[in-house]
Image (cartoon, rainbow, N blue to C red; front, side, top):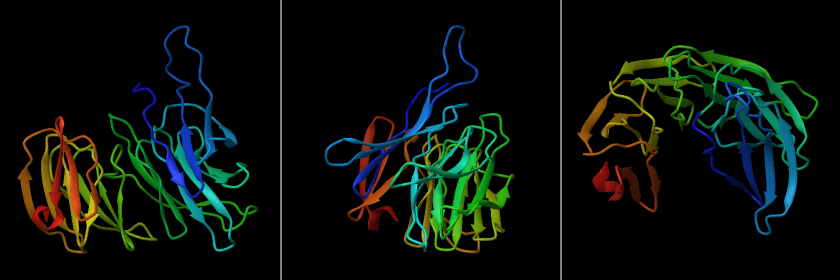
Length: 263
């Protein structure tokens, strides 16, 4: 097991933390830990609520936040023990869960329209992507909308481009998926191994292998490779964009590039 290595998420006046813990495949004498979703006040750190969850395998995705048309604000999480689930952001009450994830969830869940999208998998394969329709009110049930069980990502989080999802599988297959029906528009093998998440920059998709090979693709319904370059070092962390700059950790260095130069 990789241990605990997730990050908190700021959501308005709250800080959320998915405290996912291992309860299976333990060493002799180890006791299973307690899994929970925690919310604290962003200014004071005071506890707001804590929701117990079923622990199985450690999961690593950051929770998402969704406000339904009814005004209900939900914290959306994804994990092996609870599948894709929703929690009332005000009270901490778990409202629903759909047990659709049979393996560890590493990538973060995404919200696109009224869909919650999450992935799960393993180093040995069997990866899937599942989309669930989020209930509008507390009394409604969530329902699976679609799933993809070929060339789904495990570690990388997908990128959203309008009505499309850009997905890179850990083994180098990149796919464009139409939402909300889950139809695969195209799927191509780039090669290499991936851990960093893809990002959308304008009308382009940037993906970087663990070996440090960066590829820029057109984020369009026609597959087009626009460029490829070896960055000269390993890349495991996801690149980030901000202030007109592209930030990439290459080996032990953090590199900052102007977007006009980078693209």
